[in-house]
Image (tube, rainbow over the protein chains, first blue to last red):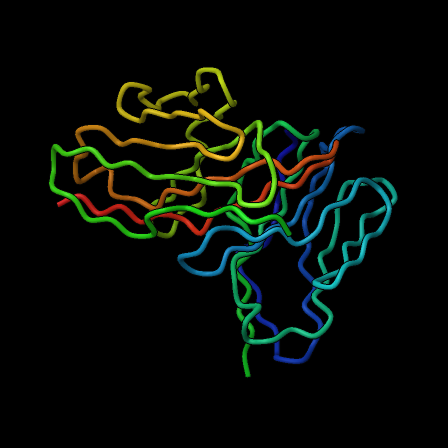
Length: 110
Length: 116
């Protein structure tokens, strides 16, 4: 699977949009971009995934660049409960494990 | 999303004993489950891939005789840490594949093992 690069940490004020970047310049055509988050001492939580089109669900939006070499996860109105480590992962298809990098530690402040 | 449940959430045991951790997919069938381990302030590390009805596939460096994995049904996989030692103390997390070509992986709540 292609590797990803994320900033180690980010801060965001409560109520503001949190934009978390991810570089995956070696992504191949059949790899999807997945985002998960892990709140302290809990299992990872699925957020969103996409192939090449932008995606939106009740939790977040995923913006993937046209060349697919990078993406941004957007939490439109961050709350204190969004404080977590966010992982951007690329993966070929179902049946394969997710390989976690170091992720971005997002701190949402009052 | 789909629900994956792990039990126990916390376990403390004496060195030399064996501990079993269960992972259940509650509302879907999972032909494939994955087991991860996470040490403090580190990321999740894949230990093994578990396929229903067949032997698990272990990642390099993971002792298969120490970490026994059984995936006897489509909704249950178990991880047994045999002859546990203090260095096995960690956060163990399972995940299960929920159907579909781009099926998301859903994770259990994790099991924190402390070996005294």
